[in-house]
Structures are given as C-alpha cells and as structure tokens.
Image 1 (cartoon, helix red, strand yellow):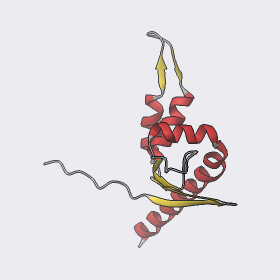
Image 2 (spheres, one colour):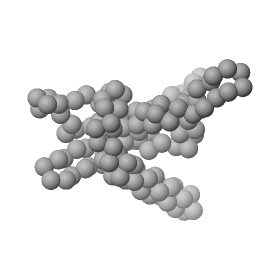
Image 3 (cartoon, rainbow, N blue to C red):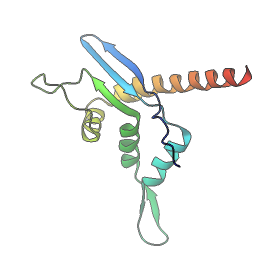
Image 4 (cartoon, one colour):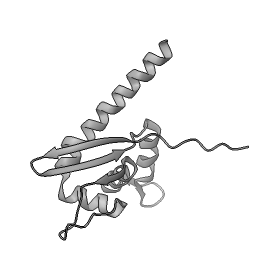
Length: 123
C-alpha cells in the first residue's frame, strides 16, 4: 500500500507598504526540494558540457515556494491568478518584494520551524 503524505502546511506572509497589501501563501522549501529544483535547472550541451540555468532555477523555485496570493491585480483591477507565468511576471516587475522581503521572511519561518522541531524532539 502507498500512503500519500499530506501536503506541507503553507504559511501566510503579508506585505504592506503604503497602499499595497499583498498576502502570499508560501510552502517553505526543504533542502531536498531545492536540490531537486537545482538539478532540473542544468542545461546539458553535449556529453561533457553542462551549465546551470539560473533563470530556470529562480522561476522553478518561485513556483514551488508561492502557493497562492491575494492583492495582486492587473491594470483593470482584476485579480491575477497565481500561476507560474504570473509569478515570473511579478518577479520581473517587483524583484525587491521577492528578494528583499518575501525570501528573508520565508528564511525566518524555516528557522522557527527548525527550532520548534528541535525543541519537540528534545521533549
């Protein structure tokens, strides 16, 4: 029998600045997941030549990290679906929100989870 594991819990992180209010639901990535994403991002150019495609790695990492969002709208005020293509467009338009806000917040979450896990294992 195969048992499907429950999807990893996602966490809501809110970005607020001026009149902008965006909620991101994120799934912290394990080292194994990051490693698998990294392995898929290599481009092979013949038998002995390979190089990392950093853009693909970033795109795939964003897609795996962000589960859903609220507060992102198009020019007409219509909600933008949380698809891989839209995550990439968002990053291209607002890299600072991802690099300087969201990723550090996710890192903090991952550290808290490690601490909780460590404390529960001690007890």
